[in-house]
Length: 307
Image (cartoon, rainbow, N blue to C red):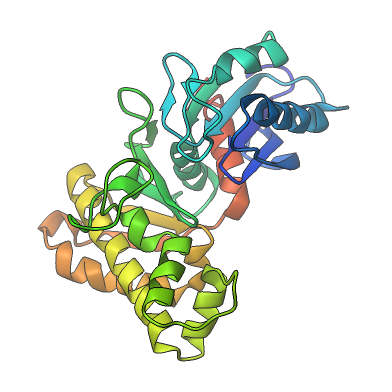
């Protein structure tokens, strides 16, 4: 890090674009939000540029840029092709950022890896060196921190746990496969399933409304969370067995349902995580909320994680 010890962090998803200035201790000092135009490449870039210029206006010089973006990403080429941002296919995100903020290192990572790294650095994962950070929201995403370091794999896409198959003959997924955990536990998919089962709710009701109904005793709503949580628990058991994890940190809008989601996750682990080395595996709520992605993106360029 340099004289100012400040980093520009960017978190790009299919709904929102966030930019922030983050200090070397992982504190977000200022931030800006924009909506994501998913079908127009240049309109989406303009939103990134606008958010960056807002947070850098009047700020001290920065020492680097960390970007977390929905994937797939290609960290070698510096391009992104997010499933949920159709307009960006092989979009040269790192090159565009180098042109916008010249003279400093620019690091790119998947948004799931950044969420996991943020929780590891400043949130619920501080005590763990082998963790999965995941978001259960509109979709299901995640990232890995292994031996205390962000793990992106060969192309930067390791940790796409939303596409672990939990129903071999299940519904088609946006990834091109079928039966992925995202098709069962993503918020809109849970609501859709509940409606098919007979849940009566106003048009536009979302996962928060489904959770409210479940807390009020609606059996179909409770069944939707039981089904979704069980699928997430099955996925966690598989990933934990492969990666020898000790902690899973779960955030996102659906996770705000609390025990409605976490209880079936833990029951599923009791059934599916039978290997002896998984006996100490813990599943806990995330702490950083919407800031996790920014904090993790900053960590891509802050020692000891990046730099």
